[in-house]
Structures are given as C-alpha cells and as structure tokens.
Image 1 (cartoon, one colour):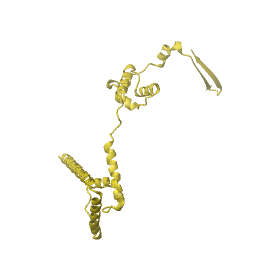
Image 2 (cartoon, rainbow, N blue to C red):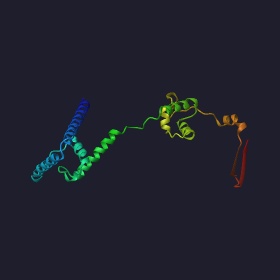
Image 3 (cartoon, rainbow, N blue to C red):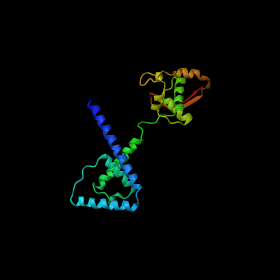
Image 4 (tube, rainbow, N blue to C red):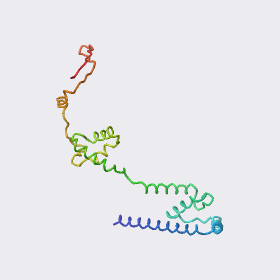
Length: 210
C-alpha cells in the first residue's frame, strides 16, 4: 500500500511539472508575438524590481524542478550570466548538466538492440543442422564465413531452447579415432619434434601421417 501511494505521488508530481513546463512554453510563444521594444521595456521593468529585492537581501524560495527546467531552457536563447540572480552560476550549470543527463536517459533505450530477424533465423538454422556446435562455434562461423561479429552470449539467446544446454553436459562430438578413420584417405600430415630420453640423449623425431 505504501509503495503504491509513493508511485501515485511520483506520477502526480511529474504530471504537475510537465503542466508547468507547458504553461511556460505557451507564455514564451505569446511573448514572441510582442514587439521587441515592449519586451525590452518589460525586461528592464522586472530587473528594476528585482534589484530592490536584492538590496533588501530577500531570500527567494527554493526553485521547483519545473522552474529549473524552464530557466535552463530559456538560458539557451541569451547570455544568462548577466541576468542570473537567484542562485550561483555553479548551481545553474549543475542544473544544466542534470537536464542533459535526464534528456539522454529518456532518449536511450536500455540493453542492446536485437539483431535482425534474418540473422536470428540463421542462428537457429545453424544450431539445428549442426548439433555438435555450441554458441562459440556458431559465433566463430558467422565471423569467419560471413564477417558478422556476434557475441556468443547473443548467439545463445537466439538458439532453440531445447538445444541450449547452458552449463550442463553438451552433445558429445565424434572422437579423434572416428575422425581419423573417416578421413584417413585424405589426410597427409607431418611433424618434427625433439625428445629427451631417460639418459638425457636428444632424439630428433620426424613423423609422417598418410
């Protein structure tokens, strides 16, 4: 009950802030329709009144989030350093940075974007047709054969669920003996190595496999 009340209070506060911002935008649009001399006279008139408050050292009340957003937005239109009176310049710059962070947080989407649908289908097809291939092998095949760099974790995400063994036992591939027997007619290999005997003699070994 307390959590629900807090959420409603937050939504209500956010709605009120957005309404105040909308009202300020409407006021700015109305001011844009007025002649420049009228705006200059009104600006000077308001500055004179503000000067009296500054002389009497009257402390203004705390600025609301809507007022902070409005001041930051209006500061983009002129040199605000000569007109700032209620807070220090460092505080105003901090408002500006906070506004940018909130804007980019609103624009950014959490997590990585999904890969194209045809690539998802290709990953599932490779997994079904090659039962011994894991996520690492599929990712390497995509990189070497097609030039597509996909993370193994992403490959695992789009593999068929019944083939995702996670950290458990995987389907065993053929043994080395089976591989050699199946490809014996096409294998030609050689190797050269040095072997130390029990009497510390060196034997030079050259191995040929055909």
